Structures are given as structure tokens and as C-alpha cells.
Image 1 (cartoon, rainbow, N blue to C red):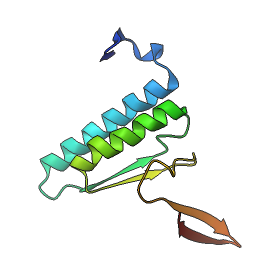
Image 2 (cartoon, rainbow, N blue to C red):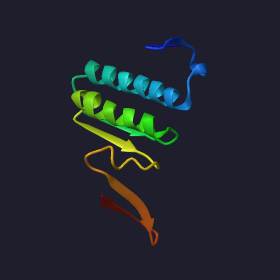
Image 3 (cartoon, helix red, strand yellow):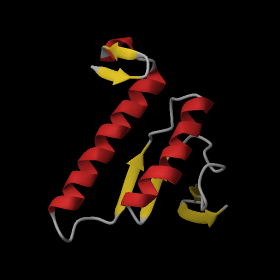
Image 4 (cartoon, rainbow, N blue to C red):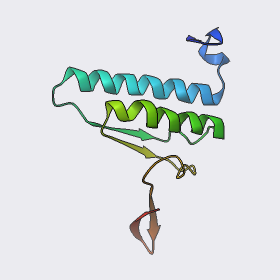
Length: 107
């Protein structure tokens, strides 16, 4: 069940983007709980494919969430994605296989 400005809605009533944001919110909350529980908890957060199947509006919400919320709790946030999200973050790196070897470049 999701309770937001639109009222109460069941998970199955949510759009793909809303489901993605809900899943992300749950993962971030759990990471924060773990970080707070252990004095040596992680100071970074890795998000894997959170922007892959969402539209531009949801990607913009992700950017806002990262910029305004996540960086207050984690010193670094890494987002792994096959979607084009390079305009969202301050540093973007691309990993690709070239001639059988992995190459990393900063965009």
C-alpha cells in the first residue's frame, strides 16, 4: 500500500515508474537503517538499474532525490544504469568492452 498526495493505492495500481520509486525508497531506507545501526556502516550507496524502465519524469525525480536527499545521508551515490542518465549526476563514467577489454571513461 502506498500513501501519498493522491491517497491510498495498492501496489498493483501503481505505474512502472511509481513502482520503481517505491522500490528505491525501500532500498534507501534499509541502507540508512543499516548505516545507522553499525558505527562503521557504509558511507556510500550503490543503486543498480533504478532508472532503466522509467520515463523522463521519473528520471528527473531520481535526480532530485539524489541531489536533495541521498547526498545528505551518503557521501557517495553510485548509480549503475543502461539508460541515458548522464545529465542527472555530477560525474558520469561509462564502462564498455573494447577489443575484449573493459574500458572506463569519464564523460
